[in-house]
Length: 385
Ligand code: NDP
Image 1 (cartoon, protein in one colour):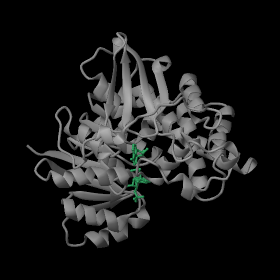
Image 2 (tube, rainbow, N blue to C red):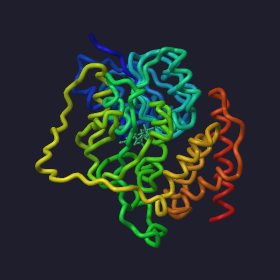
Image 3 (cartoon, rainbow, N blue to C red):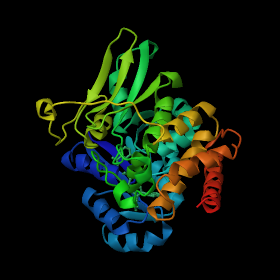
């Protein structure tokens, strides 16, 4: 029996990996909606290939190009943020939430409101909306499946076990391209160097987050919400080979880990087929060829992002949303050549230090906190270039 699927962020890295699996399983999935920001031509080609019902660009200015590219196909075209939210609300059996940044929050929440399966790659949405999103999941009966490789690994390691017996959850981190760089060199790191991830091929924003270690900070907050074992039981360990994707330690001394190739199609397949399994084209691990796996303690002097994220999750309320928004603005400024690499995290920390709004209790309030924090982040960067 085929399952319907909507992909929010179809033209991105996670979108492409998801569509690769859909392409290999034409009898299993039927595409409802595909969305992008402004990659209209690429989106139209995907919509035609997969016979989508509708293609949506968030950027309204790209709608004429999308319409022209879909002319004669019978596929509907739509544009604007509201149209992306409507795509999420279409109630596909599975919605892949793979928009980058807090821009994906409202469409992801719309999908959650349908009470079906939401495969979550868009970590910024959960980091920002935290309790608001998990409450919506509980209220609607939606199933939120983690796609981030670490959280997908933890999800698999927790299966069939009582969370009360969890002693610790350890997120692994590759350490990014600058893992061994001295502070002096980090100040001079360029966008081209930052997006060259050693083990994963990903979009620009998450690649920079990996280089600053903010990606692991955001994942720490994501894990806090997905696996409510308490912040004191969450750990991070560096593991440059990215083979062990994360692990769960139990009270009896057993540690369960999930291992696999550094290919997002593995965790995506796990989410798409859940609770069953599906084939992927990824070669199984050859542990003898890999030889050895190494693990190190993170250095929060050179990479303070994980400390800042941990403090934000402990502060609670609006802090994670403020941190995420400030980080998004700072990463965009770094990629545009406006600020140095080490300013990204210090900017986010400065915005947090300026005080917090009241804890957001609804989607609208989360969006308001996000918007205000973006303004503050731009002001902060102007004050301290
Ligand atoms: P990409 O930058 O490759 O793709 C982002 C997607 O979101 C594109 O389809 C893009 O459209 C769309 N988009 C961008 N801005 C907006 C907007 N304002 N409104 C609507 N759509 C928008 O990102 P990734 O695929 O790398 O990452 C997606 C999410 O998944 C992120 O949250 C990331 O942290 C997470 N993730 C990614 C992993 C990876 O391996 N890449 C691994 C684990 C998690 P367009 O093409 O038109 O710009």
